[in-house]
Image (cartoon, rainbow, N blue to C red; front, top):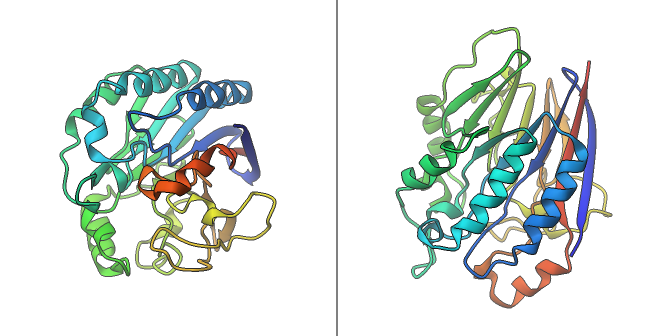
Amino acid sequence: MRVNKEIYNIEGPNKKIVLISDIHFYPKYNIKRFNLLYEQIKLEHPDYICIAGDLLDQGYVSRTKEMEHFYTFIKNLAKITEVLITLGNHEYKDEKKNKYIYINQDGFKKILNSFDNVYVLEDQIYCDKDLCFYGYNPNFAYYCTKEKDKKKMLKDFKVKMPLVKDRGKYNVLLIHTPLNLRDMYKDLKLSKYNLILSGHTHGGLLPSCIKGNTGFIDPCKGFFPKYSRLHYKYKSTDFIISSGVIKFSKASGFFEKFNDIYPMTITIINMKS
């Protein structure tokens, strides 16, 4: 078990962000991962820690006693600096039916928000003197559509997302899924964001040593998805996609055993003016 660090230097205020995603915690999780991640993130001395969704493997996990291990990890991260979180699709996944349903996670979010320095940004904003973070997670119906219905996401985004106002700040969008964002760049008015951070694609299941943004497979089982990993810039916006803490969710069955072979990924973003 090891940690891989992906490091990107981009223009922006003089700040450092550490990004992780796709933790996929569940009751029999190997919590040694948490200790290793914490120690590596602490070494970076980041100004912000962002978690881009899929904190849990299934919706029911938030109601289990083992969550104390997860909450301890989050509280330890918050001792380093502010932790900014958006949820993903797996928080709304039903284990028995193996499909996405609406599961009320207000209690889970309330507990996270009760911790010092932790902010769950579900269609909300966190600002300090230099940056504004906008957190958004598409309506769960978006994840139910195999083709990823762009119209549903576009409508939902416009209704739920607070307007990006000209505060003279650097704007960061934290969103679990990177899929369709480039196609909808103009419609979603993404040019208002300087940086977009996401996860969801698990790095396209490719090792970090392989160059390029194209992955091998996406969460919808499509082959060779574009813009599913690493960093790319489109027009005025930097897109950075985390390769994830783990590559295979519990639902993957046999393949889950490969999670200890693949390195966990933390993404380090150095911004300098």
